[in-house]
Image (cartoon, rainbow, N blue to C red; front, side, top):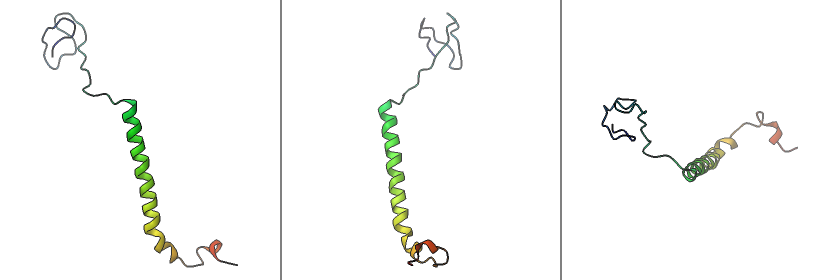
Amino acid sequence: MKCQNCGFVNKPESKFCKKCGKPLVVEPLWKPSLAWHLKVIAIIYICLILIFFLLNYLLKPFMRQLPPEITPWLQKK
């Protein structure tokens, strides 16, 4: 690992430069931006909404088969 301060080549596992003593900082390859976070959150919300409506659509036939004793509030008076 090359020191950003003095340019000395250190061992890859070193945390400090052997020549100047400065800490060797490995910069992340990619840092997500605010726009990226917003896109991910939007995609998650859209997926959750689609799953909700899909399950609602698929489970309607089963909800119709409930006996009236279980759902007395749905009975017409």
